[in-house]
Length: 122
Image (cartoon, rainbow, N blue to C red):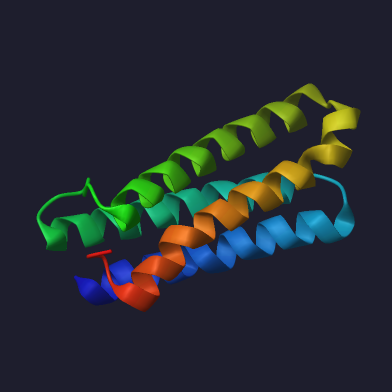
């Protein structure tokens, strides 16, 4: 179970990092970025769920658990909003969206790194 959880969290890291930073570099939200954001969210949710099953509870009231829940909620909001921007073809938001993406990515890194460095008992 640990290998599955780590594999999905690692895949989420790859998807989310590639999506956010390629969007930042291109300075334009594209459909493939949105797809990659959704894959990152799905992988992170599966990995987090597997970790939670091993810990005996998906929601843990500690630093790692609370920041992790915030990160997943932000990732969900981010993916939904990115989808809406693309569907609506909002040109202003298409070229400014990367600013929000970077903020969400930085917040997402907090529980990822705390889990890697200190373990889930943070």
